[in-house]
Amino acid sequence: MAEAVSPHTGEAWEAVLRFLSHRSTLTLATADESGHPHAASLYFVHDERLRLYFLSSPESRHTRHLTVRPEVAVTIHGEPWDWKTIQGLQLSGRAELVEDPEERERAMARYRAKFPFIEELPQAMAHARLYRVTPRWVRWIDNTRGFGYRVEWRLE
Image 1 (spheres, rainbow, N blue to C red):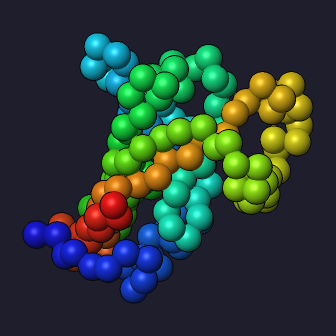
Image 2 (cartoon, one colour; image 1 turned 120 degrees about the vertical axis):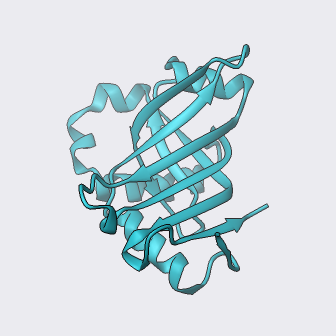
């Protein structure tokens, strides 16, 4: 059974933030106008409210889906071989283009710090757009605390 706790505080929330700081890639699940699913792996950064930011081409399949159906699901996990070390995040929320210049600059500063290689890709960066996933529901799974341990947050 999942333990429900207050968002943005507590030991579990801090564990999630630490976990995200050590992960590079999320899996973004979208659906087209007919409901056909699609999943894409993307580099990401996050903020203290668990908003996730990724760069992508506006012509990519997943970003085209967002214009029709902005509701998404995301998973982030490691690659453990031992069930006792499984940790991961599942969430659902809304994805959209970041249009606010200040928010964009804050997120891009995080992105450049986490992924300095983007400076080597000026053509790709000129074409890429920054998107934000704002979670509404989050589940943290942490088998290091016992098999099936999880905490959930509703952030609406």
